[in-house]
Image (tube, rainbow, N blue to C red; front, side, top):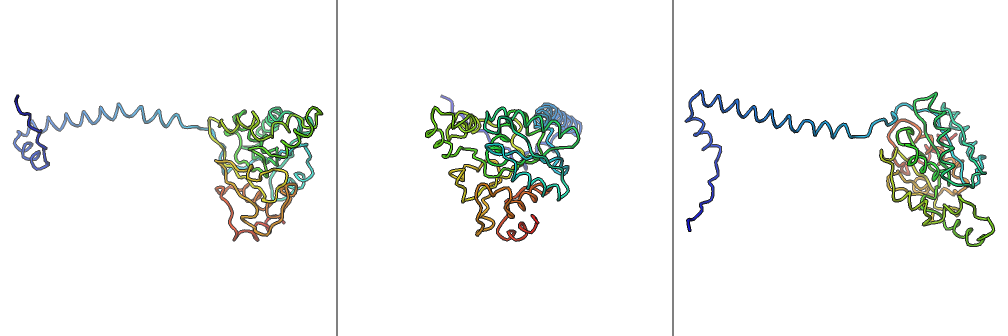
Length: 289
């Protein structure tokens, strides 16, 4: 059997000697041929690059063009604390409105998201974008709206306060105690950990991705249990106590607590969303005044 010799590596020096041995006319022809191949490869690769760029999602609201702020109440639909927060936002120079939920805020969360979509549509008629603040179960409504109503293309920023994105054991206890009595209506059942609605939310994601999102929660929350249910993988997650260590904030106090209001006002600005650190506690409390 004939022995196969390995191919010799052509070094740059050897290549130079070979090219030097060619006549000027052949060297010119070789140069033109190589250039043609480079152009052809570039032409073939070009459409793939353009296609990749064209496939990137577009239509995100500009972060430097704030619009109306819509505040979504929690379970039960009470607006008292959000009215206070909305007034503070207006004092800072922004337009703000509190959403009125159907069925007293205890009905199907999907229907609440549909009602929110109407508010967003009205706000976008007169402004460049919309910011959403969801308190408690209102944050779950906002999350549903983002995923079901192309929210990433409409909302500039989302802020949620003590929202049970992964459910709360309080809802589970309510369902167990009030089984068959109607004491745990649709929204209550949907907020039980592991419910079909929450499972689908955790499994899915909007095609365009999530908008900039700040989720604030308190370690002393006894309504959203565990309090870390308020954390989302793609959000800036902040516990009040990680910024102001001595802050005593219950679930119901989240929309009106000075430090939280300061975080909200800061997040409604145009600077990139970022978790505040303890050095900012005093400044955030002052911002809320």
